[in-house]
Image 1: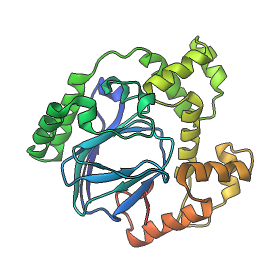
Image 2: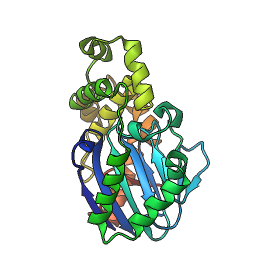
Image 3: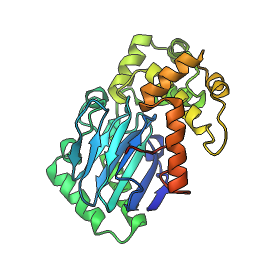
Image 4: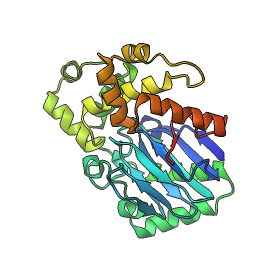
Length: 279
């Protein structure tokens, strides 16, 4: 698959980790994405794709694309044989200025671009991107569209600052201390997080801790799960195993088997490292 990515220019750099272009045949028809401390916007330029937001949900079809606020469960993406899209990996709070509703209303409920920006805007954006002369131009067009839509959002400074502290500590900072240092009550901090991210500060911290632990795994060699769990701050193996299943739906042992399958069947693939085969 072809993958092109770049960070945005200011002022979007405070909201967005990167903009990307993805095209080609996916390694597997269905991919599982564990929940990460990130929100996502996908503008689909190919055939419709499907998303199932949790094993207990039915898959929905998305033709124009989707917006996903920070998830709390693993998502399953069903890709067409030939995929083509342009998208944004938002920082946890980054999608909020572009949503017409609080992020908590969309938690684990992917919505279409049309539902967020209206049918006319969705069609016009897709048409401009589809006719653009290459990935770099597409990313610039999407960046320009987001810059045009950017507006002031109440509480953004508070959430961005405290969210940055949570990220910098790998989720290890006590949330009560975070609120005190910011000069607000814990209740106020939680309210702002639900409005702009869709989850509580504690949930964001859990996601950062889990993500850091996953990226510390070397699937090519033996895995010392006890050392990984201790380094990530899990107080015992039972807690570690519970968190692993909560975030992936898999046991640690099964997770590493699936990671190694991906490495074996598609070595060096651009989607390896976080995505997992779901079949």
